[in-house]
Length: 347
Ligand code: 3MF
Ligand code: MG
Ligand code: MG
Image 1 (cartoon, rainbow, N blue to C red):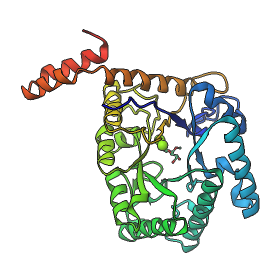
Image 2 (cartoon, rainbow, N blue to C red; image 1 turned 30 degrees about the horizontal axis):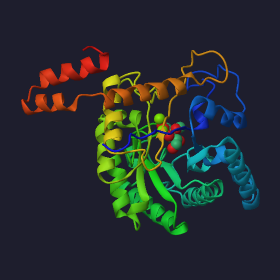
Image 3 (spheres, rainbow, N blue to C red; image 1 turned 90 degrees about the vertical axis):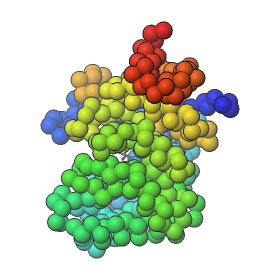
Image 4 (tube, rainbow, N blue to C red; image 1 turned 135 degrees about the vertical axis):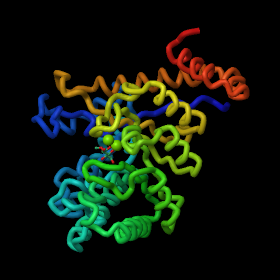
């Protein structure tokens, strides 16, 4: 192998949160949004993932000049902190106009809102110096199957992607698939769906995916295989490493916390395919436990990063020759014990 990759890490400000959930209020003091950026470097993070309104709060009520002024200020702040903006994602799931989705809403006015917001998001990405826009298509799905025409929805998604590619000739679009939550059924549930949309688009090289561990697990799929599929197509824009303990609500647990072996396999597929060597970030999307006291809580970010780095050591010290012998003998019982012993540090 060539020189080992030095990984760079990123997360979004929403990963430092106050512990509110659908069943109870926040339990920690709010940490000022603007103060979060000073936490990145000391924690070992170089990249910031943004929602458009993390960059420009209240953007729906601002003029283009006001939006551009604020985004330029954030760019300067990032420069001062030595941080790189990894992507900007339109937060299309918050507004009244997107209650039933944006791009796939049955209402023309809602679709127009979604498109206006998307253009503003691309403008913000450019102003802040980010080369990618992430589409987590939160409400582009259905609450009941009969409420929307899925065929029309796919046409509308593709049309939106093409309009984005026309609107800006440089930006990349990274689609973050998730099979459900908040909708019952999402239209882009897996990386396969995202990559099909990429190939159908008018500039497929600029359309990629962002794979979140928990989202793949919620789709009943193996996250490392999902990553391998995207890597095979040169379409892994970024990752949201985290973990998920079975088919339940989206947990955003710490990386490796529910399944260390699956985490090892994710690190392995990234490492073996040179992910990170062209500046791609190891993105995290993890949520601190509601039980954790204090503010700001960052232990889950530091811990997930540490677990990732330990697993990089595990991947680099893995005896692939011995593995190959077990594979050739098709002795998968021995292979499995070998993998588990390696992870447990048993010689
Ligand atoms: C939802 C998510 C989102 C996205 C984020 C960026 C809140 O399950 O994972 O995090 O990652 O909006 O696209
Ligand atoms: Mg998530
Ligand atoms: Mg995510």
